[in-house]
Image 1: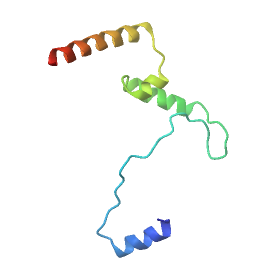
Image 2: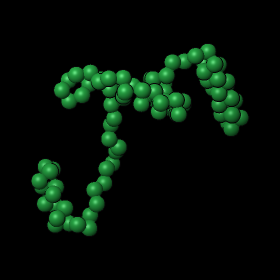
Image 3: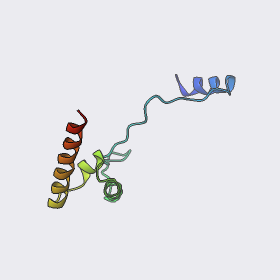
Image 4: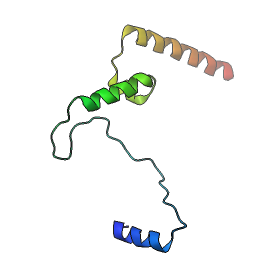
Length: 89
């Protein structure tokens, strides 16, 4: 549906609301702007801060470096997760 057709539809049906089935896809890479130039490090800094606040997220897996403490912590968490899963069976 074109934007003009949607605007006309909204005018004829003001009681209806738009429903989005899936959330929009976001580009995590920050690989450029509309002119095709690469972006500065600001976007990378923002993504790094978000990843630090959410260390177990898929974004953190992409952005953050894994130090020895994080690797050991992940191993312990995986061990206990498997132990709990086995106890539930």
